[in-house]
Amino acid sequence: MTMRPVKAGILRLVLLGAATSLVLAGCGHDTTPADGSSPSAGASTSPAGSGSGDGTTTPGTGSGTGSGQGSGQSTQSGSPSASPSASGSSGGSDGSSSGTTGDGTGAGLEVPEAAPETVDSLSELLGSMDSRPLVTAPLPRPASARGRLVGGFPTVLRPTSASRVVTSGISPSGDRLQVGLVASSRLSVTEVLLAYRTRLGKRGVVELADPPTTAGSVAGSFRRQGSRITITATSEGSRTTYSIHATLVAGGE
Image (cartoon, rainbow, N blue to C red; front, side):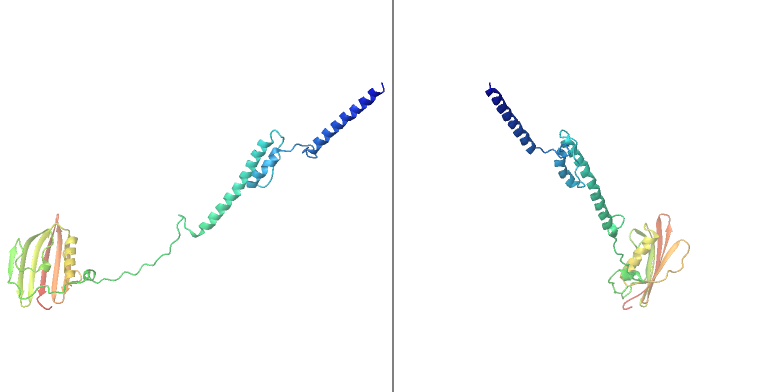
């Protein structure tokens, strides 16, 4: 009878020791903070989010929802950091654009224009000139014709292109040759005079001041040493009628 109470006491001690060991083992692995709150899974994941955010961690509210909430708050806290970065780059962009114009191109230096060269006559623009005499001796015989050019008519004063000869004539006197021509052309008044100015300029003939003319007519006066040429053009409907009166010196002018 005395052994049963002893065995029962020993059994209680064994069970109590085992329970104590389990309790102590559980306390050694307990990660519960001193204030009794549960650790948040978001606390372990938030550093990754806070690295790109504002550098703070957001604890979760529970072990069941801590992971999702912590991850979400980490993403939200990381978003504001993009705004300072964007504003910083914008500021840098504004600063770098101070040396450009409104359209983004650099402001170039203005190069002053050179003063234009003065030109006294058309011949100065035509390069090298033909210095041969306008007519040569012996001079041709006097002649006149209607509807065509006479033989021996000076080449430098031949009609312009698309012209129709009305009258032509030449008359020698000593070393001078008197030349007359009346013709019409489909060219305008300006084009007729330009054609003769170009041709005469290449032969070294200089244009003088415009001589007086009648209303509706345009004239040009030219000279080369002793030679004189006057050309008058008048617009008549769709054609231009022009006349030439010249005195050309033969040989060495």
